[in-house]
Image 1 (cartoon, helix red, strand yellow):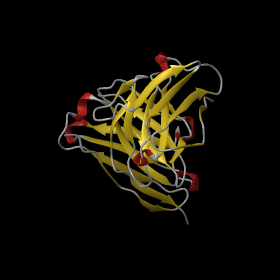
Image 2 (image 1 turned 90 degrees about the vertical axis):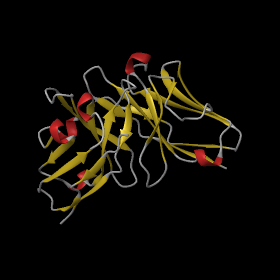
Image 3 (image 1 turned 180 degrees about the vertical axis):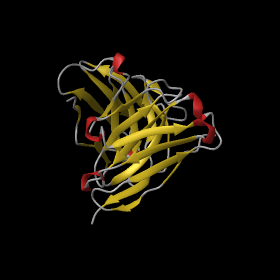
Image 4 (image 1 turned 45 degrees about the horizontal axis):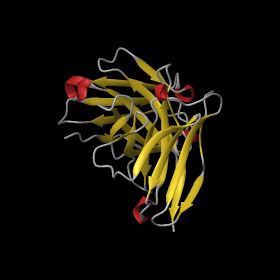
Length: 119
Length: 110
């Protein structure tokens, strides 16, 4: 059973950095593209980044390019999002999601981790 | 910049039918954009409803269906129930490797 669990959220000052993790101990994590999606308070979902199964291909939304880096460690069944130069508008719940057997859709989601950027 | 459009809100009576759409600010949505739909109640994780335009995810009731209507993707709920009162998001896969979510539609069942 797939069970994605995010961690690493918290309060960070503007301009600061944070690394989010997403672990899935029990699944065939390495066989899937993985994504990060966020949701600002009271707002809609925003796709942020994708990473291929072997980590060789990555895509980002323009608003985080150059500031956020997606990576993965298949040996640890873990996905990461390194965030830097954080801004108030990055305040959101961050979800990891699996690009699943459905092809081009997100079939499993983590419970989310809250990142608050504030001084 | 690609913008995916959704109606901000809809209301439907229990037992009624409602259709949400998912369009592009410039151009048409087609099956090759692989539209998928997600349901989210406040404070909860999104739930996958429909993928590849019209395939229901496992466990999703048959009252949910997806299609292409004209130049947009569409999600139809036939026989709405009280627990369908949620936010609904579509997402399109762009050939450039990125995904774009619509702004979401808030459905009220009353």
